[in-house]
Length: 120
Image 1: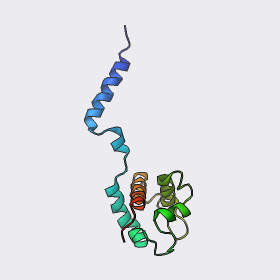
Image 2 (image 1 turned 180 degrees about the vertical axis):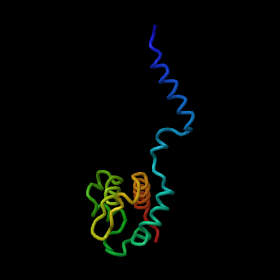
Image 3 (image 1 turned 90 degrees about the vertical axis):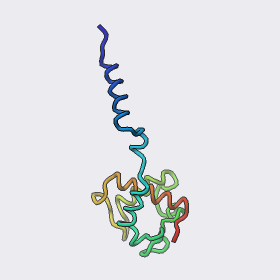
Image 4 (image 1 turned 90 degrees about the horizontal axis):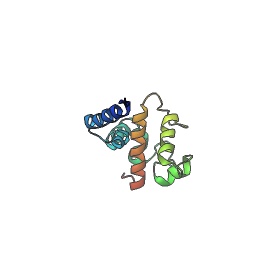
């Protein structure tokens, strides 16, 4: 008698796909709107408009991020996430204050704004 397990697994995975209604990539994609909200409530006091009120040369412009974040040129999102998680100098660590998903959302928002140029 053939083993029904592989067929059952296939059927269940198809059903789960219909239940969620979202492709797997959508579940892992950062939420830029949420990132903007988190940025506004956690970061904008020091980084309004992509600037930096503590250290004027450490803005969130793409040029300054490239100059000041390790591995930015290799993986910008990962470099920004690391900075958010660990903090540095006057910037506090947000590890434990923001979830990993929230850190992903903020990092994606910051990177998009840096690419497009912050409006001040």
